[in-house]
Length: 447
Image 1 (cartoon, one colour):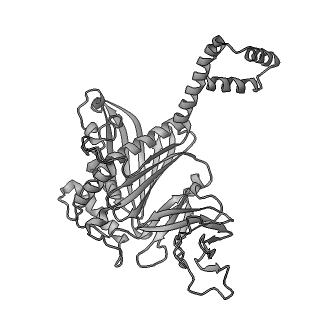
Image 2 (tube, rainbow, N blue to C red; image 1 turned 90 degrees about the vertical axis):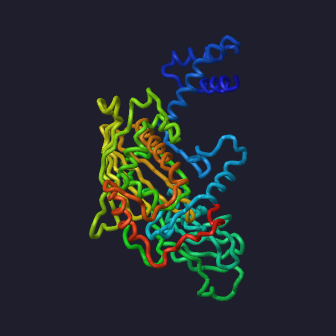
Image 3 (cartoon, rainbow, N blue to C red; image 1 turned 180 degrees about the vertical axis):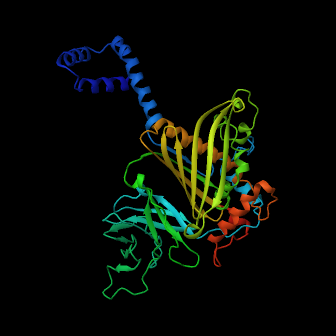
């Protein structure tokens, strides 16, 4: 009843079209409150409430977040009453890892989304087994430094204050420039700032709505740049939402899927309405099995100045009754840019769009995968959200595999798997002499 009374109170203050309607509405609404009147208004209140819910689900951007404990663990026995995190840790301790490549390849990696860092704000992020401070100066420039103050070790992303283009440590007030990491001021010292007073500054770029840092085990400057997507920069395309997932796997396992067309022809064939749990996806269902996903594509590495890039061009449709009818046809061109960025360009009957995928190591065998979707105005919001949600379900099927598989350094392949070897040769360019290797202690599998 409280909701109804609030709604009616709001309606009495509204400007109704035309004096006649305004007076009639106000007369009706200013009548003495009775049970009959409230019951009369109840359907309208429920209608508005349901309309708001429908609008939210159909038109508001999707924000789907799945942490490490929330997806990919359908295999865990239901009768085990221990906390899910404890059971996952046990599975990881007993898990065979394999002969892994280095755990952090060289390249650009997304640390956060631009909208999460407001002007004169600092946030903390964990990547590459490190804790970083990401802050935005007064002029709007984003900076990334190590979070820990070299003075006494305080975390400057916890209580630190942005002043101009500097980050102030909350412990003793030391100021560090975002442009080069040098200490600009020590408030209680009468002497010159020591030349060694520096915090590590990370080479960063803000492009396409994300803040990226350059990781290189040899300390080299960026070897290539991230392509800017003009439709996003100019604000021509609409933001349709994001998905966030965490995966317990080596980073290379994730982009390797792009060259593994055979897995698309099996794991991703059951239609998405059968869910993201593989036990449900592969269960016989005479009704659901009338529709299947059909995929076709080819992966290739680029050459010359674009040797850090690869490309997968594929077609997709939802096939009914053994391929007699096909709906939701689309062509997708996926550009792999370095080890951790993919731009998926969609071309559909309703218009164009781009899905930006970033994969960033949180620690050696824990990755975060973020997808953000932007589309043209004709690619309407409900359809765009459906596409993004379907993409999330397909990724979550992969996660169920990634969370429990072993990395095969010498896989048993057939002729049709040849693209996987080509991918591995291409991806190997992102490792170098000092790329960190995985420490094979059991306790290093904790997260």
